[in-house]
Image (cartoon, rainbow, N blue to C red; front, side):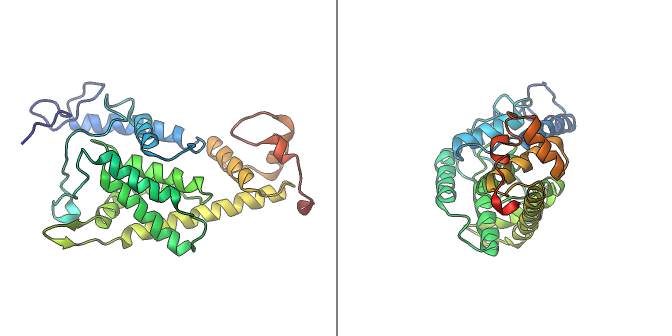
Length: 277
């Protein structure tokens, strides 16, 4: 069996920038740094495109403080014993097929018109997209956090909002749901149970829609029309300041800070629609 070049010799601890060789200490250090990076990413605008390069860049952003190989696809094949499968591993993409497999999945997602389907169908299609991309397991470590974050950013770029904090707050359930959605084997057959993933994704999308509706109502109360762009800007502003802004704050922002990028587009907001008067 090939020695895992990502591990310290005679150890099951991943090589890391801090030189930590205790698994529990590394786990704590990784959690601290990635939590900080994920909080930064939550305040970002959506990427201009969602391809494999963007996925690798996101992995780098999340794990840049921990691993030298952050953002680089794994160069070995891996197995991970899953307790929910009786210690059997999901069959991940071969390391030589990672880029091709990921690009195929992403092309399909990018070509689909997400707003044409019913909410129920979007739940299933988005869950399947996330599960398929996760099954590629492009990186030696950090796949769940990267893929879930990437997919959440992707769906919001389509104008469909999601409460991704639900995934973070239920991280163990989320990973087990992704495992259950991908449990298909040559010898054991198709053991997939995607219902667990559908359930949490539906909840997250329902919460996202509720958030969007509340923001739209607040924008209307401020005297402006609730365009998709304005909704996006106010949601980003709320996330940056970690609170919901009031109608009067939106009006004041438009008057006082004419060029605060990433928050409220004052030029657009000052153009009140006749419908809102």
